[in-house]
Image (cartoon, rainbow, N blue to C red; front, side, top):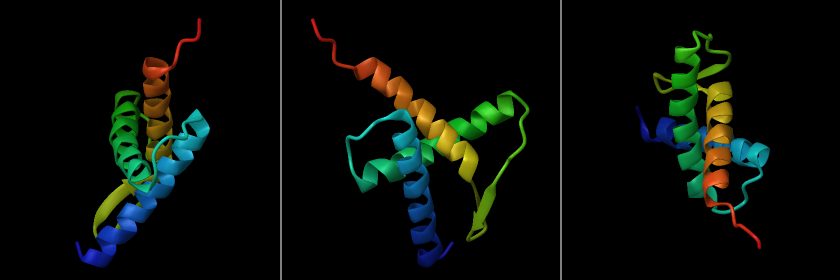
Amino acid sequence: MTLTSFLVLLVVAGICGSIGRAIAGYSHGGCLVSIALGFIGALLGVWIAGALHLPDLFVVTIGGEHFPIIWSIIGSALFVAVINLLTRRRYP
């Protein structure tokens, strides 16, 4: 994997993480948080898809590495929703 391919992979993961954050309604953090959420979402989404025997819907190959776009967005939205539930402020 070249440096250019790695940077493109980071941009794609950041976009997927941003979409997942927007779906779940989470607004804290910046670009690095979106990139991390994109990668975590990809891992979580692929795991869920494998457990439910679902196919890869939209996979982008960047530098020989496969990145599942749809499962990354779904996984990051689920991950952010769980974090939001656990860290939600409770008002009296």
